[in-house]
Amino acid sequence: MQPMYPDLFWLLQRFDGPRVDDPARRTADALAALTLDDRVHPGQSVAVGVGSRGIADLSAVVRATIDHLKSLGLEPFIVPAMGSHGGGDVPGQTAVLDGYGVTESAMGCPVRAQMETIELGTTALDFPIHFDRLAAGADHVVIINRIKPHTMFTGDVESGLAKMLLIGLGKQPGAETYHRAILDHQWTKIVSTVTPAILSKVSVLAGVAIVENAYDETARIDAVSGDHIVTDEPALLTQAKELMPRLPFADVDILLVDEIGKDISGGGFDPNVVGRKDSLHEPDPDQRTRVRAVIVRALTEATHGNALGIGFAELCRTRVVDEMDRDKTWLNAITASDLPAAMTPIHYDTDRELLRAAETRTGLRGLPDARLCWIRNTLDLGVVACSSAYLDEARERDDLTVLTGPAPMPFDDDGNLPDLLPDP
Image 1 (tube, rainbow, N blue to C red):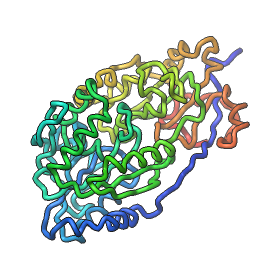
Image 2: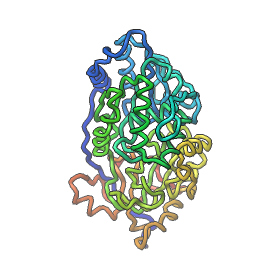
Image 3: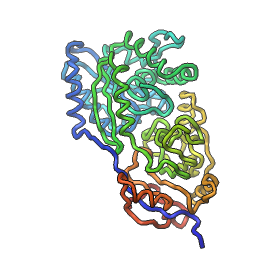
Image 4: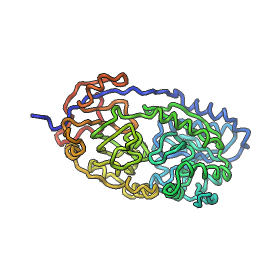
């Protein structure tokens, strides 16, 4: 009798993985090289913007930044710089920082969270520039963020320091304004217009830029002078694109994703990895990766119920819908002008049911012979389970190591797979 489901084997991917062994020391050295003491006076206040992304060494980088500012005689405090994330309110945004270890006691300085903005003026594109009220009231601002390809925006500058100045510190009103503006203007034009306007009104001392490797480790930390953010970010983005993880194979019928969340990607799962940046439920024709059906199995704990990105999947476990915080998810989608990202896909209680439904996306191959990949999330792609359809190719490639022979999918009696991709 022919099996109903494909057999799986486990493989190991090898990526280029430069790594910073001491992120705190590297942060301190990078900031020292900027000689900020020439631009500040003891006793001045500094708002340090920290975002909502699950950055590998975030707490160490933030603490090193705070310590360096204190060494200059400054009085730093932390502000959430995450737009509408965390439910768009103070308790939610503070909880996000707490979850990353960015607390007053751990960082050695106050965390001041509020959602009010002031308007710094109107851009040449005819929309207001919103900016966090507390940050605007400080003598200086420093921002900390990871540089990586954005889930929606395309340009020389995508997700990173400039975006945090505009959207992160713009709070909910700013985030909504910029996401609406991108329907009328290119993101590159918005960045090149608004960033100089902010810098003319606010003393942005520096940005601490983090680039991660494909293993979700810190590969590079740079301190960029505030007035060099737009000019220096493109090179960092280029390296981030070169180092980002990828699926082991270009053509995938079914992609099983164990978890999505805002700590994984702004879009829940990274469309740059899945090949869905410019299209919703069809593979991008110009992308290396072409995935026909995405199945999402759970939300991460750190996403706090924000299921943004679920609308990019064709199928999901019913528990994802049950765990979704509707208000947080819908607010994020509305703010981002990305309503489809919050739409509910077809969902079933079990993985067996989901796979049977996904068979319609396998073409004439059918489910037993489907090209299937199973991953934990789009950040964790070192070890992947794949269907036997890929075995011959995997054995021939130097960048892949086959770890196990093919075996049946490990369903339990209820028809579900383990919650997370098990070790081989």
